Image 1 (cartoon, helix red, strand yellow):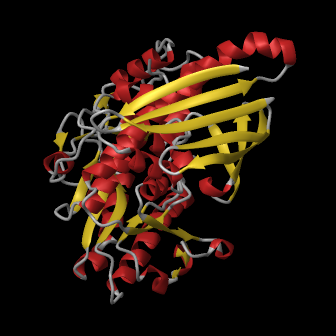
Image 2 (cartoon, one colour; image 1 turned 30 degrees about the horizontal axis):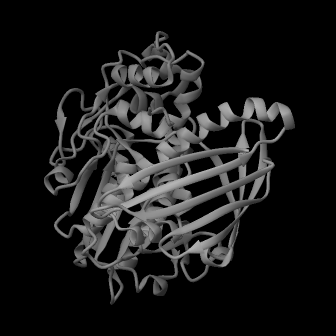
Length: 460
């Protein structure tokens, strides 16, 4: 039996607050690190009635199911999670929430494990398990700290009902889990009518269909829908699909909001720093003009599609997002394999700027905008310190402990990726989040290496 104990002190949050966060929908998802490949298969019951959860965990080409049961529940003090079935011989994880002297919470996690493989597992298991669990709990405690801090910052505001399109994507699902752990209600816009329920509303942007009545109780709508811009060369058909997936969905939501009697107070709709085209070394705040190129034209039309909602008096925010850093999907996820095998390097000259943002900060920025009535119009959702491609490449190499000495010539990028390679990889934007900073938003990850270490679990 291996017994490991972890602890974090949360000085500004009472045990009842920290305990409540853990009991709400989305808590386990928020505590699951982005580098882990985990599917949530099923849930039955709650923490206080011996509810169960079944996970499917992937390791390379293999996967296994892990079924867990909650027990020994004591309100605001403790709950325990035990293995029902899985690859381990046994798993017992006890969470305790004790009050610190002077206020705050001492959160302690005691994990008792019997590894598989008999005698071999007893020899090899402790080192591997201790290393991975240490990495896991460092991540968990950091995310818990930042999530609680963000919710506390607006703790005096009423809880919201937020409708989210694109809720099955990385950003949308993480935003939904962040909101529900903070006590907000989330309504998902879904395209499969079989998923419709109390907190799921049917819509079909391509056909112009939406269950508008179900949005009547929403305080806010967050539009994150749109097909990926990086999945394949930009053929004419691909460009049309990218454009339609964004413009049609935004137009449908905007018209629907404008036609409602009881309208949401705020409509946040995605855009991107591609709005600025190739900005070179120019400092780009939200007052900068649109650039040229497919992405710039797309973003202009995308933002323009919000006008019906704006004209109806709803507060509208268009979120000009930079590259969101998470290993789960997106740009960073695609970069990891070549960098891990030592084949990573700068693209082209490496002088083009990358406006990036940690995914947790991006979720925090959306939450901040939801709760801050003074913010409207375009908002640069980027970290305050954009970096060049060469700087980003070096930082990722240091975090992974790999060399970055194999540059990719610009001509090769253009030959392989065409227009996509030119605009996404060789062009750049040096964007600054002036509106967020001026409104008092706090970035927890201002440096790109700091963000990469957190998202990849490479902190010490």
